[in-house]
Structure formats: structure tokens, C-alpha cells
Image (cartoon, rainbow, N blue to C red):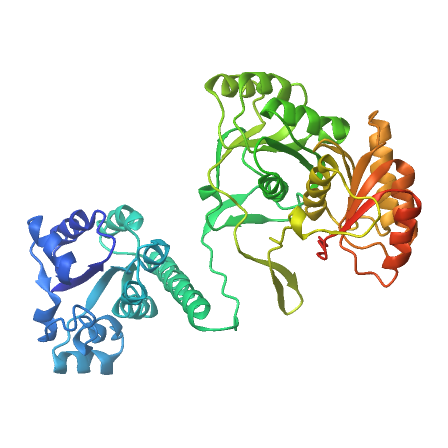
Length: 505
């Protein structure tokens, strides 16, 4: 009995070799268009699909596989007497192997030169149908969708048959593949043609299993393309908590700009600074809270050199992340065997949707990418910030944006002096920030302070003034704004409103 394998691939990687091995196992190769040409050019006998259907490819290849003789050959049940009888009567041969992968829709979308017509033409129709048909009939048909599957599949086929378990796993992979493909298309068209998002479609491939989640009794895994953004080139594998802290560090340091450094601990900044050099930025950031920095995550926007590497080696740090490292710096930093060293390959501050699980679904929001410049600030006090204060206020505002609410941040010379985060009371956050500063010998006199949300009463502002702040940045918008402004004027400090709130829960 003649055996048939259908091959129709967009990714031609190793397809000729795959076809050759199938041919040696006495499979008749059916193929479409360019796939058939490549296989034939390699010396393997191939049957054009139009020879089976008796119908040519039409509309520039838009229709080529959609035919009962193809889908019947895939879908008929070999153990069903009526199916077998009908197939024999109509002249349908069984197709037992289907090797298909799909038009490069995502790559076409990502290509800035692509037109809408190009993108639409790269929506595959026949391919997903072939894959789904083969996967549906997994009891009798093997479906292969990835060149990385070829070797293992052939090795098992050469034993004489493909196991039920293998066909099941191939079917699961196939349905996952088409689901992800359809998700990309739906998301693109919804964004292009619609005014609102009607569904959330998340379909990220498994990238790696993690040792555990937030705690050892929780399982965890990483999905998507995280390693397109970060290259881990030294140290232990990243943990769940490492990844969360790393993203917080990368987002904040990108917001701060060139020659900046942040130290993150438990998702909050333990220090941040912009300096004359990478060494200067790290040294200033470390002064804010050198105790909490122990075991923290350091992210920089500049190259790590030997001088900075020696400084970084003075305390234990979980992760050091930078866009680049000198060879000398790498040798120095690799002396700490378990510490992770990462290169950031591209920006993380992109437009995206943030999700949180809730019973029955998720809540979603746009990422907080809002920023302000000095021209957008509203000076509400008699005293106006001088140029240096204005720079520090904007710097402190960026830090507060990335700090858990309620957030109070003290800054001077683009360096954090104290950070109060995640407290139920804004006054308590101010007290913690001041306590930390005093604990590490940092003087808050003539510093500036940022509050991520407005002061509902003047008491929070008065506490910040008591600790030494000479200028404050806050959103404004309280029904008691006038009371708060009066308190600022009575204490001769400058205050600016942003009209933007940065809660981070």
C-alpha cells in the first residue's frame, strides 16, 4: 500500500533532507509550489499537489491545498469501515504525515517596509487548515510543524512506526502553533481596524522552567521572548523574583537616562543616581542605602569598566545588568561565581498592557509610560524652584513613579537620599525615607522631595519640610490643595504640581 507524506512549508530549513529521508522510507512526497521545487532540485522525486487534486494553484497561490482529496486523505478514519469504503470509492489515498509551517505573518508585521497588503497576504489559510486536520486525526496522522522536530520524528519513524504518545504530543504542539498564529493575526487586526480590545489573547511559548516561584513551594515558568531583551552570560539561572526585580530596575534606569544607575531590592529602589560616569552613578546610588543594597539588583545605562567592576565586587549583588562590559570588567566580575551578569539587548520601556489575575479572569491596563518635563509643571508657591532644584524634582518624580505607593523620595544632585515605599500612610513613608537617610549619614537639608500622589492634608508636607526638603513635587488635585499650598508658602519652600498621579500597587 502506497504511503503519502504532504510537505508544504514556509520555513524551508532542512526540508529537502527531511523529504529525502521520508522517500528512503518509501513515502511518496506530495508538495506545493516552492516546497516542491526545492525538494525536486535536491534529487528527490516529488508529486505536485495539483497532480493529486486535478486542479491548478490559483490566485497567485492563495488556493492550492483546499480540496477534498487532500483533506479527505488526512481526515478519514482508518479504523472506520464507512470512512475507508468512501475513501476507496472516491479514490482518496491516505496521507499519514503532514509537514506544514505557516507564512511569516509576524515577521512581515515587524518589517517596517511592509504594506498592509503585504501583511494581509501573509495570513495563511490552507496551512492552518492542514495542520488542524492532521492534529484532529492524530490517531492516524503525524503532524510536524517545526524543523526542530525533524530529527526526532525521523528517528522514531525508522523504528517502524510512530507511537500514539508521539502523535498526541505532535498534535498538541500543532494546535498551540496555530492558536498562537491566529492570536497574532487577531491582535494585529483588532489594533488596526477596531477602536477597542474585545478579548485578551495571551499565547506565549514556554521559554524555560524556573526553579520555583516567589517561594520554594510554588512552581513557576518563563514564557515568551525574555531573552531577546536580556542575555545572561554568567552565573546561576535567574529566579522568579530575580526577573521581577530586574524588570523594575531596567524600567527605572531607562527612565533616568544616560550615565544612570539604580539598585533595586524587593521591587523598590534602594538607591538611584545619575552621575558623570558609571562609577560615579553607582557610588552615589549605593550611598542611599548600602545595607539594603546587599543582595540587590544593579542596572546601569552605561558600560561597566574595570574601575566600576572592582567597586561592584565589594558587596554581594544578585544581578548586574548593563548594555555592555569591558573584557577586563567581565574577568573581575566573574570572580563571584553565582552572581548573574546580564547584557540588556534592547529597551524594555515599550507600549504594553499590564495584567493582574483576579477570580474569573484578569484586569488589564496600559503600562504607565506618562512623563512630564519642566514646561508642563505648575509652580503653585511664591518661591520658585531654581534650575538645580527643578532638575532634582524631575529626577525625584521619576523615582517615585517606580516606587510602591505610598511613595516619598528625597533627592539631591540627582541622587536619592531616602526612599519610603509601600506604606499605608504617606507620613510613614516620609518617616522611613528620612530614617534611612539619617541612618546612613545623609543630610536632607535643602533636598527636594517627590510624592507619587497628592497630599490629602498638609501634615504630610509639613513632615517632609521638617526633614529638610526645600522643594516638593506632587500631582496636586486634593480638595485641600489650598491648605497644602499655604503650608508650603508659610515655610518658604517651592512646590510644583504635575497633574499626573503615579500609583504603583
